[in-house]
Length: 200
Image (cartoon, rainbow, N blue to C red):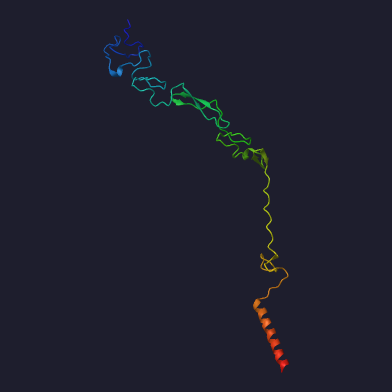
């Protein structure tokens, strides 16, 4: 007759002595915490199933999750969609079933799911093209810089033409100012002498 001491016949009892186990007395380390399951008893292997398998008062120590549980994973930003992770052996498996980030292409869609569209998407265009809001378009050379006005022959404040950009102008000679002054001095001396001769 089963007296209810070891219903699951795993060798561990909930209380009292098991008549089928001669000489075995119940102790705190041999008390079955679930006499309806033979895989639950003191010393049993702990598995990640939400049950205290080894009857030590803790459930699933070291487990990140309970086997068979699922959770959403991934992102819903941009082109991405959530997938599902399933727990196995106490750890979450790979994310599956969703849309994951991918390299950007020039299509005004956020394929890499970072909140920005078409950044670094030039690589998806043909050679010589760049990505724009209108798709891949030929690269046009930049406009040439505006021509700078010439500084040659700029009138100064008294109307004399001067060249502010050059040291000299073609066809013009440059005499030292001291030579000009010397020539003027000689001319003045000659005129003064002639006046004296005429006066005498």
